[in-house]
Length: 85
Image (cartoon, rainbow, N blue to C red; front, side, top):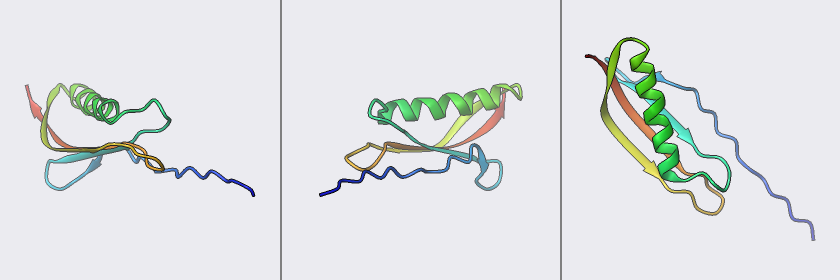
């Protein structure tokens, strides 16, 4: 018997427009040590850094996350806008 492990690779396109002035960022965690909370924290930081680079602050419009389970990595999605300080 041959056991083959296949790991799916998801593309993370970075920050993309989501309509109007709203931007979206989504990520999947990779590896056994990646938690749902960790993936969510990473995208919130990336979005905040993106807005800060423009001299603005991040405003969350929508957020969602899903835990990982055998065969699936944790996922997180953030929709946000950059607003003036």
